[in-house]
Image (cartoon, rainbow, N blue to C red):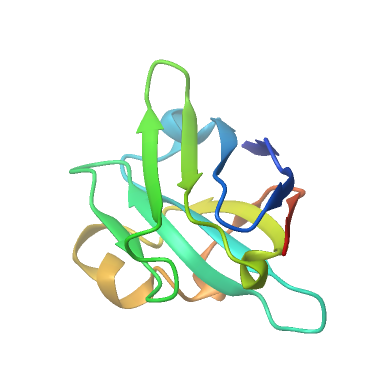
Length: 131
């Protein structure tokens, strides 16, 4: 199982950026799972941003990014994307891709934002938004 993020960078406030997470190994091991994005800003705890479930394409967002960020997946490319629009300085963070089978089924809505529920993590990609 492997998660590899890419696409981070430096943008100005108000601009857009898309980060990607290439996912491998999950389909061979799990019938259902969720892929999520978390982020960690300097001096702050890691927080959930958004997630998408493999089955039924359920998506969830943190209140701070609703209406600005969109999560999607390309099954053929085994990639999950996070499109970030109208970026703010406070969106600056390392963005991590994570996944696991315990966040699945009927409990996704109650557990997707709990980082301890995820088993696999990528190395992170830096997103910096300047004013």
